[in-house]
Amino acid sequence: MLTENPRLLDRQLVHRCLAGDTLAERALYDAHVDRVYRLMHRMAGDPDLAADFTQDTFIRAFSRLDQFRGEASLSTWLHAIAVSVALNGMRQVKRIRGRTENIDDVPELAAPASGFTADLKAKLHSAVDALSEKLRPVFVMHDVEGFTHEEIGGTLGIPAGTSKARLFDARAKLRLALAAFAGDHIA
Amino acid sequence: MNDDQVNELLSKGVRDYNQPGHVPREEMWARIQAERSRQEVHAPSVARRSTSRAWMWPSAGIAAALLIAAGIGIGRRLERSSAAVVVAPVGRTAAAPSALDSSVVVAPEPNGDPTASVIGKLRHASQANDVHAREVVAASPSSSGGRTGLSQNPNPNLAYQLVVLQHLAGTEAMITSFQASAKRGVTDTLMLGWSRQLLSTTRMLAASPASADPTMKRLLQDLDLVLTEIVQYSASGTNNPDELNLIEQSINQRSVISKLRSTIPGRIPSAGT
Image (tube, rainbow over all chains, first blue to last red; front, side, top):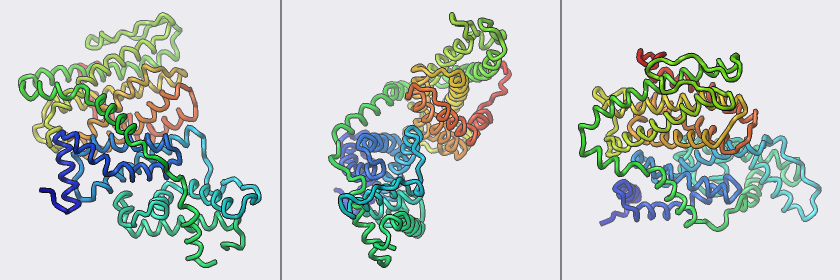
């Protein structure tokens, strides 16, 4: 009989997968694919890339399932692989696209035409794109996808306190990037 | 506006940042299954065969040892012949090979490019070796939970240990070949297939007890990165000097070649090095 303990459920599922149970593999996939895909899409900003990164995450996860120790939750373990895949993939994409912009190079937007909110949002999204590799995953996971600092710490292999510090830095950079645009509104 | 208000503004503003739409569950699952089937195409039959024929291990070890020696020999030869190409007139053959690696005599191609000939022979040898490496790794105790590292096990399975080294020798040959080809502005689908196969085997090894050895684990991680870059560069079909430079930087910064050479027993006398 299955237990209610999530960690034990994870281990049982992994054990069944390792034994070659294809239904268990599909159950593992179904249980986590939506959240992994959402995060990949938030990171990549492109549905095709998000699908590629998600596929690669699960291919790697299945091939390394024997390395899952159950010290973290299966979700955290999967997201750790996913973030690694996404960061490596985005590096390649940036190289290919030749995108080297940083937060200081975000192009100035034209004068507000369709209202403050839309332009501010566009500026904000560009500024999030331009955050560093250390800050962006933390900001996206916490402020966009609603992960806790403990979950982020487990996923990125950093203490929860470091996650908090990085979120603080990310918000400070975003505030700075928006200040010039929004002027008195957020200064 | 105070900090809380700014944070609230940020929070509202990023809610639809890269907003995901429909999750293509079935499409992704189909591709995942296809890729996994492709990767495991050799594993099941070999696993069954090997568990019932323990006597095959010694012969596999001997065969692997010979292949390693050949791999190292041709890898070293490639460097020499690549250098020779720079100075030798087109159409001339490189130096005569030793007895062991006579199978990789550098015969000139019809277009007078001996480097292409060497790379072609290296590729064939490496790919054949790599298939064997996958078979042995897939059939090894690694798949059933053995967690011993190569350097930690006092009595490791010889064949298993040898195929890991054999794979590393093939990878060294591939990276060296890629560098030689790319410098000449040549990238082709054969190089893409070769690098993809090695990347796949590298990942297979990374999931095996080979990665229980921290040094081997780091080396396999470095190889994963470099081979991924080479696969993507080769797949692009373009000769972009900036991209090539980045790959060279990855190879150099991680000291991949020197790590490979310090791991591979490159001074096997019979290897002709």
